[in-house]
Image (cartoon, rainbow, N blue to C red; front, side, top):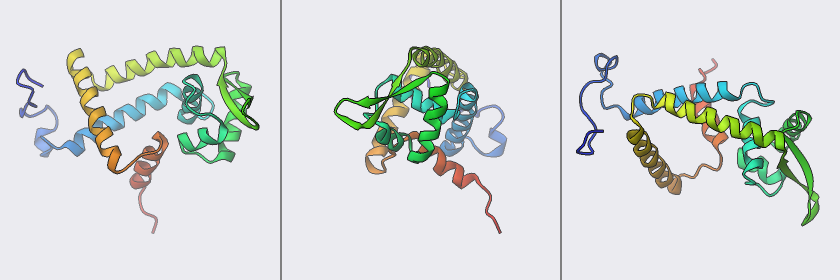
Length: 180
C-alpha cells in the first residue's frame, strides 16, 4: 500500500505474464496455501497435528465449557475427539476433569506442559505470519491483518463459519479431483 492508501497497480514479478494482476482470488489462494503449509508443519509433531493444536489452544484459552462443546467448536466428531484427547492426555498436554456444574460432563484443561507448548507455538505462528506476509513491512502487515479480519467478520455475519476446521474441510473437498 502506498501513502495514498491505495493498492499499487504495478505488475507483481512472476505473475503479470499470467494475467493475474489484480486477481484477488489468486492472491488469497496463494496466501492461504502458504499459511496452511507452514502452519501444518508447525504442529505436525503433535498428536492429531492441527486438530491436536486446536484442542490445546481451546484448553489454554478456556474456550469450551466441556468436551461436547469443544468437539462442536473445532468441528470434529465427538468419538474422534475422545481418541484425540486420549493421545493428548497421554502426552501430558491436557487433562479431563469433571465439570463442577455437571459431574457427567468433562472439562478439558491444559496442563503446565500444554501451556508451555502453546506459548512456544504462538511464537512459531508469529514467525509463520511474518513469512507469509514477508513482502510487507511491519505497518503494512498490521494494516493487512486488521483489514482482512474486518472483511472476514463482515462476511461471517452473512455466511457464518462455526469453526476453523469447517473452512479447511470445505476448501479441501473442492480441491479433490472428481472420481469417475
